[in-house]
Image (tube, rainbow, N blue to C red; front, side, top):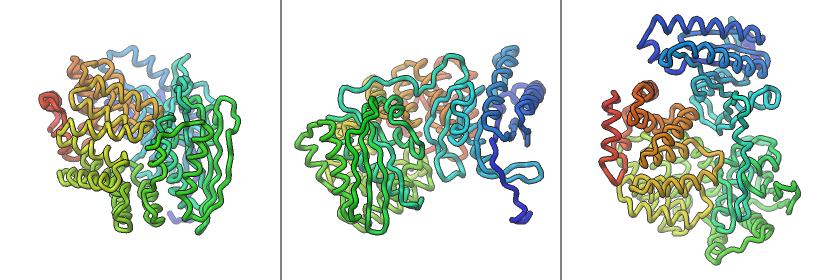
Length: 581
């Protein structure tokens, strides 16, 4: 087919597969195929009734397309209801649950088949659904919100395989009377509370997106330092990026009284920033300002915005906070610009992006060897590859430790350096030193949810999981739309306190949100096996085997428990269930 003959169209793509299909086939191949064929026939009939078309059905998968997202979602809901009724007639071990994903995207059609990123995203979103559940992408949600008789739970942004930008994902909540999770009003803190929404890039160039995101990140980082405020974490506020969110809704969803929103226009050596502080209860503006400056004045401009927030909310700064807010990390604009570019890759949480961020942070240090934040950020790339198993060599851990110490030597008031050193101490099993550094980081950035999480996680490994749970939950309040790592660390801490029901509930939610995040699955499998739910534990083991295509990460063979018997028991139980560790 020539380029001219390519047929493109916008479609609602419906992707489904069977949860635990390998297990079902292993136990009863004939019975599984019989059930699969019957369920497929039911699905095909409902797809046709809802004006859709089955495109393909290889193995346990089914791919369909619809002209309408509303039709696709309503069809998916009806399918799951009917399959639930069918499953009720079968023994629990023989029930067949489908996971369904829906995306609105551009596809290429050729001889009745459809291809392209639109299809790939639907398949990845499907993988985030639980058995009997439905997940949809952000593009689909924009079309179906308030048009279908279901609620939606926002699951955050997810990096998915072979897609460069993160995908917003929503879970369909089908049970009658179940409210959207975001509709649960969070109690307002006693302190003035604020969320800084992502500043809009007004430069007319998507390549400048990193700069507007970086300005947002810097403002949040400055506010983290102020003990008289309550500041929502970066991850939660960036879920609103690109969305026309009403400040009243943001206030309700994040549990804050005030929202800062604005825009950035960068053109040559000139910079324009607009900002406005809004009361989420009244919708009224506390102040609004436009700043036109030379790019070289970017740091002074950020200071002005921060100071304006402090004055408007009548927050008293300590002398130490005044000094820290006045301190700048670098005077080198090129180095600063590169750090913002590096952060864009760093926050993608993928191995290749991590390496790109590392290369950029190294260039920053070459430009400005005294840039403490760049040393810390570079160190985090090494720690990430060690802890996530992207590198099998202990050299990565050693390099992270060296960079943390260098960052602290350059700027002892930088929480990033202390937090990084705390994590390296943890993996080196120097637990008291790890706790001390993590506590310093929390004191320096009292609003930083990541620092609370770091401390909670370290306390759990150090034999103080009850305290760890408190810090992790506190971090989750500062980051209400939290990453899956928060759920994993909370579930892990519950496991260490032998609160297995709470651990299983929390880790199951983590697995539903991100099925390929192996730490959650390892810990969930252990908990199932520990409480005697062998079938569920072995099912998790099978999923792990399918997902893990590389060697078992070296870091995970040296789990940093103060009590070494904890780690040995953890690994022994998983080995006994058939994992080659």
